[in-house]
Amino acid sequence: MKENIYISGFADEISPDFTEQLKTVTSLGMHYISLRSADGKNIAEYTPDEVREKLMPRLAQYGVKVSSIGSPVGKVGVEDEAGFAEHLAGLERLCEICKLLDCRYIRMFSFFIPHGKDPDSYRDVVIEKLRKFAAVAEKHDVILLHENEKDIYGDTGARCRVIFEALASPHFRAAFDFANFVQCGEDTEKCWELLRPYIEYIHIKDAVSHDKENVLCGTGEGKIKALLTRAIRDEGYEGFLTLEPHLVLFASLQSLETEDAANIIKKNKAKDGAEGYAMQYHALREILDAI
Image 1: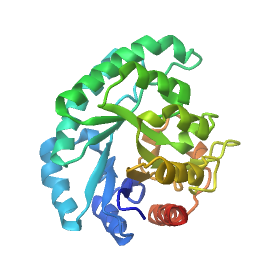
Image 2: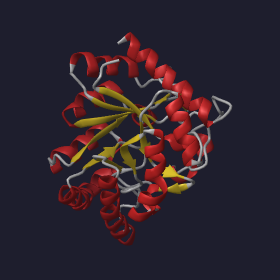
Image 3: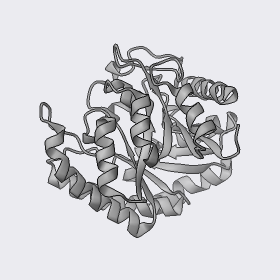
Image 4: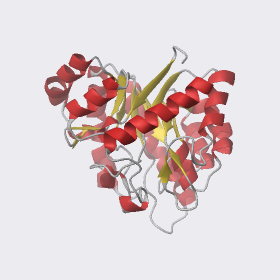
């Protein structure tokens, strides 16, 4: 594997217990995680002092670094002004945590759109709010990674492109999620074409469109092997490939979804989170070895 490509992952899919997460990650030979939750608590609920006292010693013990903060910032209704203010204030704290962990990236989203409403009618208010997020990131010199996801404004490649063109900020970039585009009925290759100038980070997650279920990477409709080949071999992509398997129903999944998690993962693909995580890791390594 190229020296400038790093496999990371949302290790809370392994176990809520942070030590168990780190044990499994290092047993696979990984040296990075994307930190979404630890010991059953979302990273957005931690204070910098708690991160310093409870998480950093274990990261150091296992020799694991943090590739990104997997925050819920922006997963709030676009019309919810109190929720937006709370997320904006929380982002300040997450930026401090990011610096503590020597991490450059914070994942975030572009607001839930009311059911039945036209997302395009919210363009201006979405851009205005995202500018405020980007200003906080610039102040702290971190990079926000907008992840495409169903039910938010930036669910399609076209609307993601609208966001990046409008903000035009080096502190606001794209995390490309194959499965989320598939689940929104999008062609991942066309989305890659639209977003390539802005892609800073890649999530390794696959899905099929007929029932929107998550599957092992490379076995769905995300075109992961073809697009990674293009990214790494032809376009010189450097950076993180972050595992987000979603192959097993795990403790915090329901809090991440707007619908019943059982509709996303209808049947566990492994006996537990650790096995599902290992399956995704080895499937990705096979793809990378072929590339």
